[in-house]
Length: 60
Image 1 (cartoon, rainbow, N blue to C red):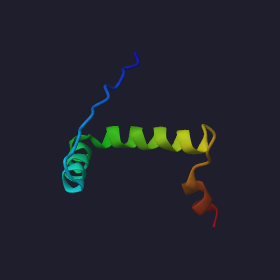
Image 2: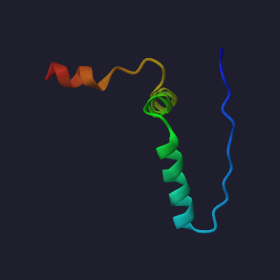
Image 3: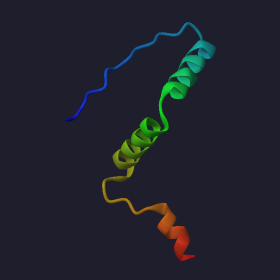
């Protein structure tokens, strides 16, 4: 079953407040959530058939 993430909007009054809120959001995520988001961003940027960078360094 696929779940949908709810979009959260936070309007900050200063850059510092926005930065603190962003850090708090990242701290509250589990490592699995962070890895899932990183993989999603990687696929969005480089496409679904991106070679694993670790394989590149193992060949050297």
